[in-house]
Length: 462
Image (cartoon, rainbow, N blue to C red; front, side):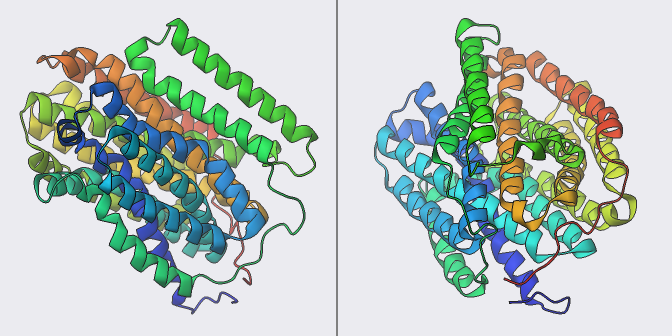
């Protein structure tokens, strides 16, 4: 199908892909708020409960490049549909689980489906839209990514307090089935970006092991200590695996990715922005959720409702920046967005109280939403459609890295408050996040290219 400027089916396709992506992002935070109920029902200890979240994040982040490369080799349509099918089936299995082993197994399968679906769906978006419309489409996509995390807290609270924690998984099943049927009809039969070569399985194993090892180290650094032998040893192992992956990519006939893509300034700048934006977003969600539930004594439902303005602010920030970025360029949008994030996050660092947490985090979320859009448009500004899948996988991988890094750092800084009744840890955590946002705003002036986003990936026949 040849895409045309007047074809409204492109926007319907974006809507369907956005709903699928929304489920994936939602599943990170929607489960977090249900953890106390899951633990009580299945008799799980804290360490096991951590893996209910981490198993999904590890597989999602670790297999992302593989999903992106598969999209380039086999076509986006087949990988999107396969990923959605796996994710939906795994959601049903997770809801039916009556033991820790079955639940974590279901979460691993969900992560595999998400890693196939997310980069291939983003690849479809970048290949379907062009010019100013592509900036708007990426703005919508970024709003889904940022807003989905906040809405996950809301929906998790509603479902956990209502029909039960199983429904944080069951809710994906009817939505997944409907979206699968509609996407089966709507997705064009695209041609693979490369007709020759195969999937670099050894490379996929190495990069997945490296990413999974790094995320595992970050997840556990708060408990083990950042300078402990276990943390440093695990991070060193990740470096060795990445080194082996880099060597293999230089000698194999059909590499998983061309490492020179990382030397392009727009790609490097985009991955930096997505790393920082995600780390900030997940950090303030983590701190805010713990503050409201553990210190203010809010229940799951009330905590979820408190995150509604944060979700709206994230969506508005991403939407407005998606409209602005074509005229002003990514650099000012990234700088202003991160500056707004710093100002907003500083509010709960300075003033105590639930209202200050919600107001400040909402302001900060609007700025972070803008940074998400700047990250996407910057990354894809010089990417050819043949590399769209790998670029999408790379961006999504750094998204997961950012989330794991953010939680690991602030959970260490705020440890005193997470384990007790004092607020000093929360204050330090919000202060640290605000400083990181301010420093990143300055760095954005240096690393983000000054030029306005080019037309980038051209729309083409599928």
